[in-house]
Length: 427
Image 1: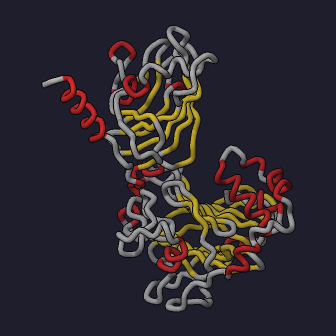
Image 2 (image 1 turned 90 degrees about the vertical axis):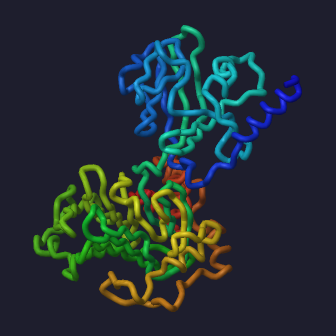
Image 3 (image 1 turned 180 degrees about the vertical axis):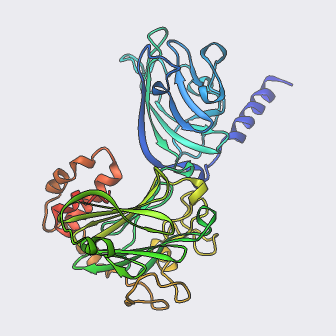
């Protein structure tokens, strides 16, 4: 075989490994920054980044990356096992995955020096082989030689592995199970999520009722059903369980502000209520010690969020917020509606052959479609009349580290013309 044939073979092999990444395999959850200081103990979990069940990365004082989740130690590693790397981001279409050292080709220790060229990048994609997932990774620092083995990077999180949850809040923003946000402003009853045989027992359903006011829309009521029991939460903390309104709070005759206390249960899961000021309420349905369904109320605007879900509990979820991998699918489980959010909303309107979880029936009801805002309202909501954007940014400053939460907060404050929205707890 001559030299040209060898070159052609090598090129063909490289092209064969280039690929367009499946969207459902890309980790798009909130970014986190991990830092391992120079000379920090690599065996201490505090200096390890636990990315997935099969991947926990760290580095010794002057060694390459190692994956302690698979038992690697500094003495027996040249590259972390269980992962491969490509230069670029998950939006690229020409990624070639290799070992860490082959992917960075020696630049990683040099790129943070002031005299190094600008023809290299600190942006990479890491492939988690066991989980079949892709993580965006941006290196912030890398200590060379025997300088202590410190390094730092910012990476995406894998909502597909659980933990990110799902939510609907504000001028309705919906967070899919992969951590991506989209807006749906239709007014109707919506099936946000349905989990058949939840924890091997009864079905779990979360429905939301949206309505419009002036130039924005919002959730006015949330209903959660587990098995045959239903909890409904609406404006100013009004709630009912199985049709009995505010049973525990009213019977106690107390309107005093209080910390979280148990008030009842639904489907065998305890419910806690907390009120820290006259304008806010929070209800938590506790699924496990760390997983819960939270309904937050600021004045008459309600939000709902699932915190720290596991794939074992929510892996077969369907609804407006998508499936557990983040795909926004139609009821047939096949049709991708991520490119048409209005169609997605209409698809997951509560049907007339499905249970009515709300005590009161309100138009529109299927087959009448969700009411969408007119074009003039869409345009008007962008004018930013009322509270100035700079004032909204100041009010939302406590959320600045989370880009999505910060943006949603600014949007809601300006849309509702209400600075209190920044403290709604919905973000």
